[in-house]
Length: 120
Image (cartoon, rainbow, N blue to C red; front, side, top):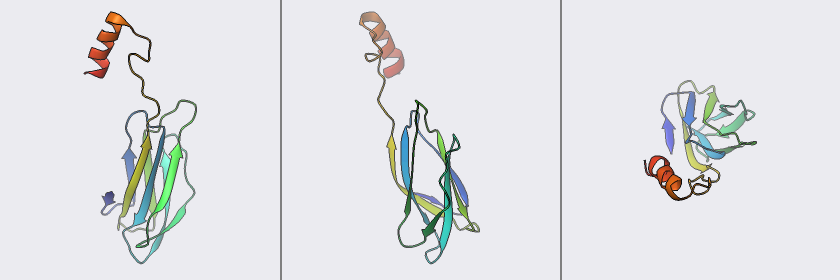
């Protein structure tokens, strides 16, 4: 879980090659409801979603198409007045893993590729 103590907007920076991502948001105000909007780096956005505080989070999910990656998601809460919110139950899909062998390298090229790219 991630807790934003006083902010109304937070940006999640996602790992390389993220193809899909989901998360839940809940207000820090346990007796009030607020609207939240989530927007990806490519501009894909949710409509404002009303989320009740103290009664469980509301889910948001995004996926990429055509070989694109999701690099960040910005979450904004309307009317929070600096009270913060919680982000939790995160899920990620990074798509298929590319390896030196899957690229077709063999013998010496395969070993060099593994040494440089896979073993660091």
